[in-house]
Length: 152
Length: 404
Image 1 (cartoon, rainbow over the protein chains, first blue to last red):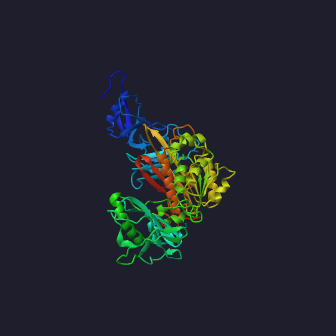
Image 2 (image 1 turned 90 degrees about the vertical axis):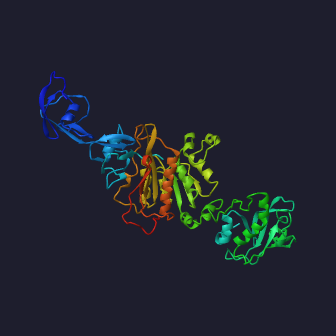
Image 3 (image 1 turned 90 degrees about the horizontal axis):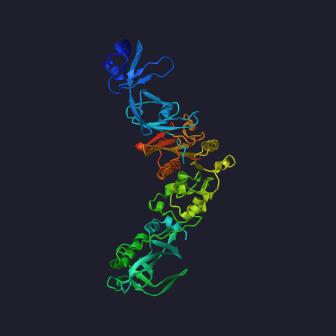
């Protein structure tokens, strides 16, 4: 699918380390097609330095590509955290990551102790409780609860 | 009247547990409220008076098949006297204020093996005709069975444990002197449960007043008058539960650094407070003095107009595994205020569940319940109805329950 010809010029990008010739500006949908990204996978745009890589959502957003830019796709998981579905791409999540997923404004300073329980996890850890500092492998449909348990 | 001979004699205990109104006096077993039909075919109630032999406070087999009776002469469904049991109708004084009007003789094919058999046989003869006039009339009236201070911590006998014959398990809790710190929702339900056990003393610590919103997270049903009194929580609850048993101590204050040492005199402590630093203070003192305790807490959220969250019970005993710091299970920090991760939602059934889990944990430590895993941390997750168990000691199974 090509964008209306105006102002487009050819560019080479890399998707999952394979080179592709395409044009810029293009759309996200076009890029997904180009790299033949399967369902349940998301594209990410590699960003240099210490910054997190930028997700490229499926859709008709216009994308400006730079020469030899790198894109890669990862498995996306949908998990439930405190009754809300969350999409993550890490195959394992740490205690701290789960706290950030659970709350828009997580506490700072680490003085609030959370209790985290989970179920529907992958074998051998189908269900249990997580300790600070621990991580747990995740799978689609895994259910987490993250709360402080200090009310009596 | 001492319950000792009744507790020690299986037939007498059975009569009491089945609801008969029995009394031991002057060497006789008296069974009251036996329904019978008089000559006018009216249902009346009389008392059977049976000679009782005790040896070392245990009832012996009935010496004969006779019985005294206090009341009118019992009749059949037509109003005719039941002749076959007649012996004589001389009024006699049996001693200690006991007076009998009639003397019966209902001879069984084999001698009565015990008093349960003798009483129920006489009851059937007398009450049968009465039941043709008034269906279901029975001598099993379940009267209140009082108990004396020396015998029991309760003001009336624990006939529940007696009827279920779990008295021997129930006695395992008698030695405890427990404290409940915090009489909020969970603490109140904890008191409701612990007060019904045989523990010697229950010490209540809380500095707050019992207010209207507390009524919705407490067992029972506070009246408007109760709320208007603005009583301290400890006083409100101590008054109610002292109706049932002795040994409830109303401290009228919470725990702080001035009085935390009092808790080291307890044999077990239940923590049901919100304040993290106070939990830390108590935990540190109790662990230093080897006093076992259980900490309760819950965290509940409202998402998409429905409620979810977790309920937690964490224990400390001498066998708590050392590889998990108790500070990573119990929140010792200052509670965060006004953020979405620290809501104040609490709901009665969740408080009740939290209390029930804590009581079960404590009773396991005392050997009342079987306990193979000795988990020292437990969570209940609402949205999946799941209980997780963590912090188990390395030994797969320990022979002794953990005692102070």
